[in-house]
Length: 347
Ligand code: SAH
Image 1 (spheres, helix red, strand yellow):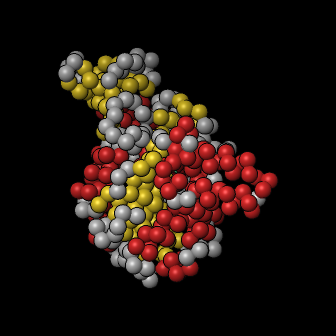
Image 2: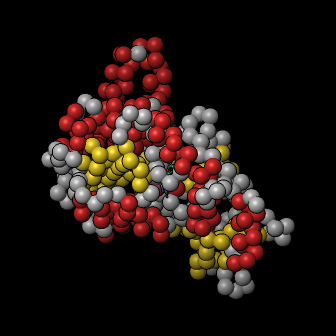
Image 3: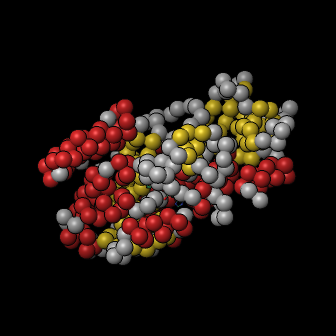
């Protein structure tokens, strides 16, 4: 049975399905979910992320991590955790940059939080020779030592739900079936029952999973001491609108088009995430754009040094720099959220 057939029979059995359940099934079904079967990053895959644009990205995150380690008082052991490491590119660039600070490299106990078996294999290959361990989620990490967490495009995979305004009330937007038995978005009202969603609907999104995760990050960072960096795309403040998106072969398509065959994401509601982290006991730095963050870390200087070492690649390095920092590319839509313990000056 295909994933679509399974989803359809579940809807026939139990009625319209929450979008969060649909996302979780499409991404993580152990047999047919996207991350179990065909996660494909990079030029030949479904989507490109910042670590694939340029090695400068991971290198600067590595320096950020080294700076946190210094602010933590140079502990002899620090847990460095990446969530959703994809094909391992960012961690391998981070580790290369961190070698500039040998005592930090020596102190690192590296863990990867990854749910996808094929991506774990890719990470094993990318990080061959480096001792790393895997955990299924934050709860499975050791509970001693200060910690440094990093994650790029991880929060956007956490499942969301949607609500639709009809008159002055909000009703859940779910996934149901049309007369032909195809998956469609519906508005699920108790009376007169589910009706088709419409183009002009006012939609609001909410992610209990994001809030829950934010609280856990806040609790962990506050308890162990440390800093956490989350880079992802989403608005700086409250926003409405449908941001659920499927990407396949670098093209956007309807989330319902090919369940399990496309990557599914939604914009990250950073204010909810940061508020939850503070409720968990941590502090948070003001949200920053990726462009400002990378410039502040010195990406301009790094680009010049790389171009001096590879003069024939100067134009390419300039283009990569622009993709990462220019407002028209990733510089403004992508935001950087930092959660830290109260004993640490905002890194
Ligand atoms: N950080 C990488 C990959 C981003 S794709 C990059 O920037 O290129 C999202 C990553 O998060 C993948 O590695 C995916 O398998 C992982 N992931 C998604 N949801 C997860 C979950 N609930 N638990 C653990 N890993 C998850």
